[in-house]
Length: 248
Image (tube, rainbow, N blue to C red; front, top):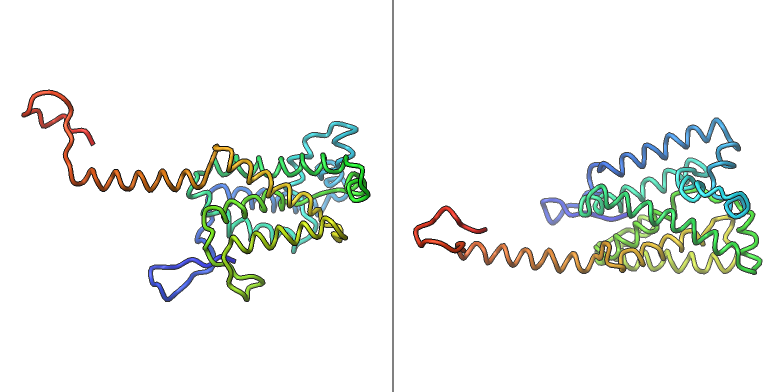
């Protein structure tokens, strides 16, 4: 998990602090659906889980979004929500709630769309996926992890809570593990959906809609301009004694 420096260089705090607005709403929604799922299974998973065959045959397109709010057990939802809080909170603070929710929805739904498209390929693994029920927020959360790695590539995270590594390396390892799992026996985990979340997030961020490098350059330029403004007084056109028309 990421570690964040406090006021004092020698101490570290666990996590990014308080829960931001969108993260709180997403965790609440996932928890509520999990409770409903507990009492009304398998009906909930049949209608809200992502069934590629149902999307193709019966046009149940809502499943491309609703599958993100279902989970396969307590460990599954706890791990996903913990990861969402750890990596998503700081992104929401930087982007704003609206942009973060948009990014989360695009990556989650996009991962679902890519999963359905992959299931139509003439491979044994794809044909198996075509008949599978996919649940979990991991597609969107993998997208959040990639965005975090692009914004804070050198931020330290603890692999298995033991080994500190840069977050960019952590995300690369997770991506590689999922590629290998998607080729071999994935143990029932829809690794294609995880990779889809990474792919959609990368394309979305690099498309110019929310480019992290461009934003960093913009903020640096804005900081330089503000420094220069402190050294000079700039006036609009008019009389020399017109001091009330100062331009900041």
